[in-house]
Image 1: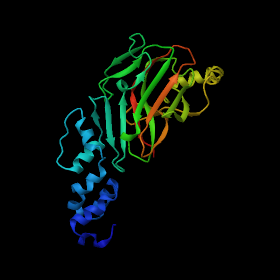
Image 2: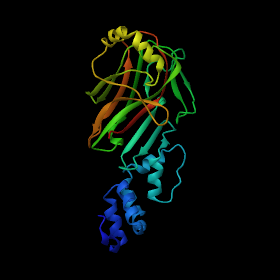
Image 3: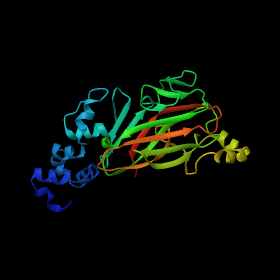
Image 4: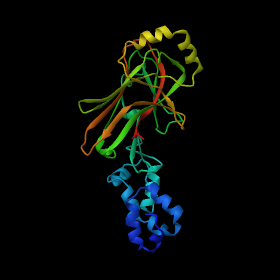
Length: 281
């Protein structure tokens, strides 16, 4: 594509060629041939990078979007927008134009979340959603979210991530591993285990050193699986991978879950922002 005579082609021809590439390829092309910018900025190119349900998504935005071209709209969507009364976030990947979503805590099914003695709902400045859920105290932890594959990019590998914080007053969260799962229809697609702990916590490192025998005993109560540990994100939140799945051309409901119901110990101090579903690279 990046040949020396591309500058001699008609503008609409260049636009058509570029529309068959990717957003990243178009931006690279402009670095080499800035004179093709009119063709590269045209709606012909950027309409191909917008999802087929783009206008439905735009109609569900929390606040009206202002844009003057399809390229401008693409980059607005790639920065993530709130939709569905602010309870979900939608974004396009800038390099590949693949879709991703974040389901807020209000979109999830959380056991006992309507019981004031167990959970509280509050606003914190670090969250992009109006409310997060904070576990006050409970002996059982079950968090579940669902998404239909038809709203995601087809033929794409995805992963689901629980977005959390752990408060300084947390207790009982990592006494036993949590079990995570991804279910598509009636098929179990992925299962793993994880610990609800801050990887930078010095206190937890000391507790594991002194109580390692008890930790091993509690681990024996849960199903075996690849142990996924929380990872610190750039935005300051922790994310736990719940599992992976692949989207085909057909539609099905995918259920993403985390649960800990076998330890029976009281636990608290877990803050939930939501579940992010994004392409797995």
